[in-house]
Structures are given as C-alpha cells and as structure tokens.
Length: 321
Image (cartoon, rainbow, N blue to C red; front, side):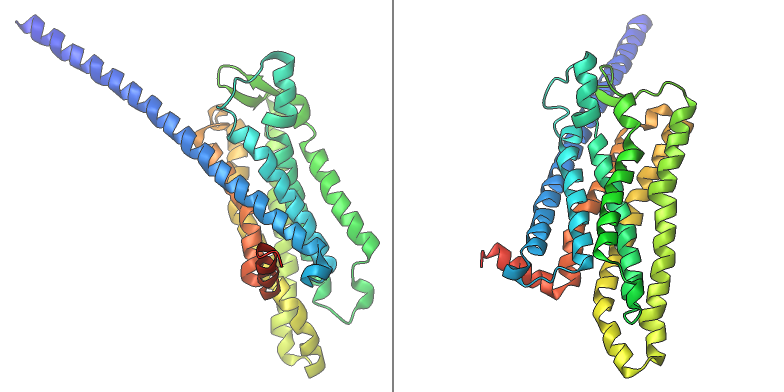
C-alpha cells in the first residue's frame, strides 16, 4: 500500500510538472502573440501618421504649411520613422506567419528583410536627424545672427549625412546576420566574441550617450536664450524670439521621448553580449524594441499636440479639403 501511495504521489508530481511545462509553453506563445499584435499596431500607426506628416509638409500650398528648414528636417525624421515601421513588420510580426528559409537564402533574408537591419538603419537616421534639429534650433534662437543660420546646401548635407552615418553604423550587421533554425530567429553570428562587445559599446555611444549629451547641451543654451535671457532683451528682440519657441518646445519633447524609449534597448544590447547571450532575442529584449518603435509612432502625435497649424492641416487632410 505504501508503495502504491508513493507511486501515486510521484505520478501526481510528474503530472503537475507536465502541466507546468505546458503552461509555460502557452505563456510563451501568448507573449509572442501579444508582442506581434503590439508591433503590428505600432507599425501601422507609425506608417499612417508619418505618411500624413510627409503629405502635409510637401503640400505647403494646399495646406499652407510653411516649408522651412525645420519642416525639411521633420520630413526627414518622418521618412526615418516610416523605415522603422516598414521593416519592423517582417522582423517582429510576420516571423511566426511563415517558415523561414534556411541556408544562404535564409541568411540573405535576415540581412535585408527579416533581420531588422534596415529598421535599425532608420532608427539611427532618426536620432541623427534629431541632433540636426537641435543644431537648427540653436541657430534659430539667435535670429539676428544671419551668418550663423543653416543654408540650403548645409541642410541637404546634414540630411544626407544622417543616412550615410546610419548605413555605416549598421553595415557590419549586413555581413554577420544569419538565420538560426533552433531559435527560429535571425541572430548576429560574430566571428570573434570580442567584436559584439565592441559593437554594442559603439552603438550605445553613437546612438545613445553622445547624441543625447549634444542635444542636452544645445537645448540648455536654447532654453537660456529664449526664456531666461528673453526677460532682459529689448521689445523688438522679444517679439522676434516668439517665433522659434513653440518649435523648440516640440523639438525638446521629441528628444526627451527618444531618450526614454531608446536607452533601455541600448543598455540591454550591451548586456546581451557582455553578460549573457540569452538576453538577445529574449522577450525582455523584444519589449525594449517595442519602446524604440513607440518612439517613431508618437512623433506625429507630438506634432499635433504642440502645433495648432499642424492640427488644422491634419483636419483638412482627413476631411480631404
């Protein structure tokens, strides 16, 4: 009887363990579904919102939205955010909807479509554009220093440079990204264990620490010039400074949102190759990627909340007037 009882109890333990494993599998699948749905909603909102931003800026005569230096930079920022939306879908939405090819074909798809390399290129171009906007706001806060203002040639150079540097920063990923059939995920297959550690530090510095520090310094000077120094300026000077203040508030808001959304992913990317390889591609890592996509999605809403003219232009566009 005691042996039968021990057998029954051990049988219940094994059954409970099987149920636990089955429950964990279901939880993982539910988490994947939630992640895919979240990425899909963010990508669709990102695409539609930023397409609307491009339409409003380009059709200046129709919507009376003045195409200035800042508008041109916002247009480039919208294009970078659209790139993030387009290439986040095959990476995080459609990855469970089809059987990923293996071999050289699978590696090619990982490097150019399903691996998210072009998504990160758009994200890098986005932050470089934000730095350009910070420089433009610094020049705009000094309206009487005409020589300091950005010319059209310098502006084109800044926009082109943002994409060139973004492509160069992500260039190694187009050589080392490959498909891993065991994890059913595109992974970074570095030839030496030291390389991903160095690359993670470079990414954190070039996309995180350096641009955020630059923007913090520039906007602190802008805030001082537009708000603090404004109280001692002449009446004519104060009237001239009223123009860039709203746009500056918008730019500062975009910078703060960027810092909040990107720093968790940049930090975790470094930890993935310095502490545990299991972090890369984990659910926690993917949720930090959700934050980076959220950054691209909320930019049009920031425009709408900060600019009355933009809200009016959106209303006209939606009503097809």
